[in-house]
Every structure is written in structure tokens, then in C-alpha cells.
Image (cartoon, rainbow, N blue to C red; front, side):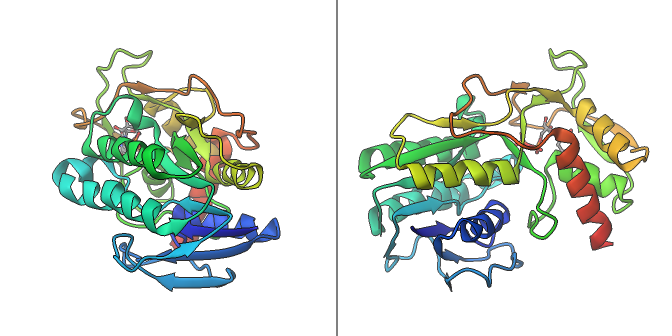
Length: 287
Ligand code: UDP
């Protein structure tokens, strides 16, 4: 099949493209590389640089996997219009200009709470896809982590497992725990983590099966881990002690976010230990 991937040099995009090629698909993709850095996708069949909002955007695929977007909650509180421009208007442009019978979209678990412009920008995009796409598969990703050992998360670090890996590898001195007074079992926020390779496999199942045309498909693990659980796991797999500093709650954070209805596209191979270990090894290699 011919698959067109937006945001193909990003974290999920680069992992997905590699697996799509392993599955024998023809892969085309573009990116604007707004992080100022990118993952190597020179193995794909066609790559070009393009802004999602470009009025001359065009292309087609048996499936279009739309991953390009912004995804950092605190940043979205500071610059909401950027999030609506890229995530909502960019998706409108993509769904209008890229032809396909299966428009596959990376949405987010934070859409359930809509506590940030990031979450709201993705829900707006979901609505536009449902109105305009011929066929679609909307994935709500829970907290994506891990690496294939080659490709990695880009941009300024902010996500918990990446920060924990940096602390374990000695690349930062400590880690702030944003709030320990939530109504959860240890007072810290609970999240549902899923490995980027499991996410990629689920997307490939959607590419090969055709559009789901459901409201959304949840990609997570159905297991909740607190911030302290994650830090403990990172300490175990890295055999280190991470210095933790208690800090105030982070604006926009939901106290708990766990998959209720796991998508049938999910067939998990990886654990939280795998995600922590992969990211720790990646940080050691960056030293
Ligand atoms: N978190 C933390 N310290 C950090 C980064 C994150 O305590 O340095 C917490 C954050 O407040 C949230 C959880 O870890 O409760 C997951 O945050 P992350 O940014 O990884 O993902 P999000 O769920 O916000 O998309």
C-alpha cells in the first residue's frame, strides 16, 4: 500500500515509517522540522519539507497518517493560538488537500478532560475530520514513550519518562514532581503509558484493515502508573537513585488518565520497564 505520513521525522513518525517499510509498504512523508532537529527517515521512498498549513499541500495515499502537530500541554497554555493553528487548522488543510479513503489521525487522551488548549485543539481537529474525511481512524494516544534504540523524542524535554531517563543518566541533576496532593493512591498524577513501537504497530493495523469510522480508538495499556511509580521503575531499570524535588501542581494536568475501552487495534508487546530502559539507554548514548 502507499502510505503518506505527515510529521514523518518526528518521534512517532520516524518509528512508524521504519515499521511501515518493514511491512513492505511504499512510504511517502513530509515534515517541517519545527524542532530544528529531526530523526533520519532517509530510508523512506519520498520525503519533502512542507508546512501543514501550506495552501499548495497535496498528495494521496491508500492511507494518510496525520501525525504532524504540537503536543506539549504547558507550552499550549502559553501559546494557544499556535496550537489551534497547527493542530486544528493544519488538520483542516490536511484533510481537505490530502486524498485518501483512510485518514488516520493522532489525537490524545487529554481530549477526555479538555483541560488545555492542546487537548481542545485536538478535539477540534477530530470534529473536522469526522465532517470532511471520506473514511477515518481517530486514535487517542495515551502517554507515548520508549524508543526503538535509533529514533527519539525531539524538542525541549518535558515528558516524565524522558526527564526521568535524563536524571537517571546524570544529564540533569534532579526531577521535579509536579504535585503530590492529588486524590490518587500516592498523591501524584496517574497516567497510562504505551510504547511507541506498540503505537506504530496499532497504526499499521489500521492502515492495512481500512478505516474504523468510530468516534475514537484508544491506544494505551489499561494500566495506571503514578509519577512515583514511573520514577521507581526508572530507578530499578537503571540501578540509580533519582533526586526528586516536590513542586507545585502543573497547570493543565488532569489527576488521572487511564484507558477505559482499549482499541482492538492494540496488541501490546512492551511494558513500562521496557519504556524506561529504552529511554535510559538512549540518554546514555547521548552523553
Ligand atoms: N511530571 C512531573 N515531572 C516532570 C514531568 C512530568 O511530575 O518533570 C508529571 C506531570 O505533571 C504529569 C505526568 O508527570 O502528571 C505526566 O506528564 P507528561 O508531561 O509526561 O505527559 P502529559 O500527561 O502531560 O501529556
